[in-house]
Image 1 (cartoon, rainbow, N blue to C red):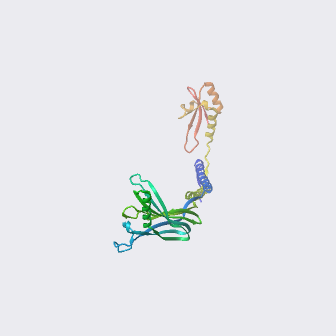
Image 2: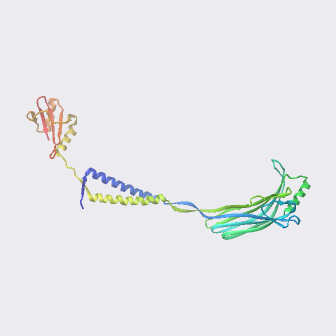
Length: 348
């Protein structure tokens, strides 16, 4: 394998650059090894949807107006012909995986008499328990709870008439709100969550007719979060990148060391000697461009550089340094002290 010779300066620059890159990649590997490679990330360990719905029917008193005894939801009803309502309440839990679900549900009716006008104020109210709290528990991914509740419309209407006679107050607003409240707790190995869902129905006992309003259908979601360790992509990429670059630069470094050598520069003894003189007596020496202004017969050769310095001292003249490059041979170097008619020269 051929060894390539490079100039020493070029070789030093090349070896320094590759070694620096290799060292930098090595430092990068050390950093990536000490950097946190994983971090905690929050995720949904469990999730489910919760839906509730109220479907009701209106049961009539005996009458000769309606052929049927029961009217379906979604219309207006005559108050003086209504006996009671039945509400079928359903709760539906559906999760992505099994969980333990427990809690309780109940139904309460609130009868409220208020003044009329813009500033409606409560004059009196009553609370009636329709369904005592019912506890439930279940292990699985889907749970359906259904309950049919009777709402004694006629009783509440008669109660309100009795209160009107006792108080001699005619309500501007007389509303009945039936609230179906369910409280739940969901537990898994990753944690637990709690919440409630509250569908309700509202209708008026004042007037000859009424319609059922309110939040007859409700849906929401529940979630249990946990944390897990996930790799930090930047650190993983940095480890791989630094490892590859260190390997590549290491190969380049080894190949550079084995396949190249620095080329030693030839030392010119004349230049070395001239450099020493200039370094020692630089304040007395003037470097000039060109050659001696005198012909050879008008030049006195001086054997030693010290003798040339003595001549310069006696004549109070500077020492001129001439350097004439020559191709294929050593360059010509000489020092001269110039007088009017002749010159004194020391040649290297």
